[in-house]
Length: 247
Image (cartoon, rainbow, N blue to C red; front, top):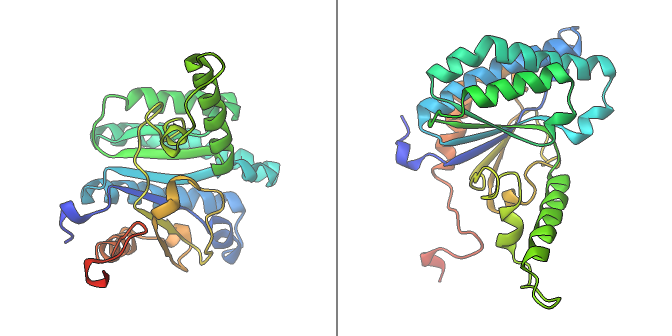
């Protein structure tokens, strides 16, 4: 058992491989997303039990609109299904839901289900479960810069305002203190054998530890998740510096 004080504060997960899982079984792609949802439910509970405070999953990217209408609509229907079937258990486990991304562009029934999910878990103070929906890392940075520009205009004195800092941009990200105040991820996991970030938390992941697995997301188990977290506890995180032994 991993000591809770050693677990990462924030874990991000790129849940990849649902389509390939379904194809290997000669099933429609939406069947893979349904299986992936079941895996996600298990990882949420596992993260909560391990004492992880923040879990962010990449559920639907801004690029996913390029997929077939059938697949996209199937994903949105699963969102509604997830809320109806899991809301009570999420509340019982004290899980707090945040949504990052422009989810208001989703179909109305999905938006209403998400709003209910967020409102119903608002008072929970356990795991912060952050779902990235219609999210893209670059679009998030653009949105942050525009919000920062508007704020700077209010501070302007005689046509001059203070130079922009990294902290300024971070503040106006979805995860920043002007919104949800979610810390940068300590660990990012990607399943299915792909080894790239795919526009996920591109600003926040500057010093994240990265781990990859060939396991397709529907087959990703709490045991493998815990094994990765255990490996993380042995990583030497220097944030651009050096070990004392190397100085």
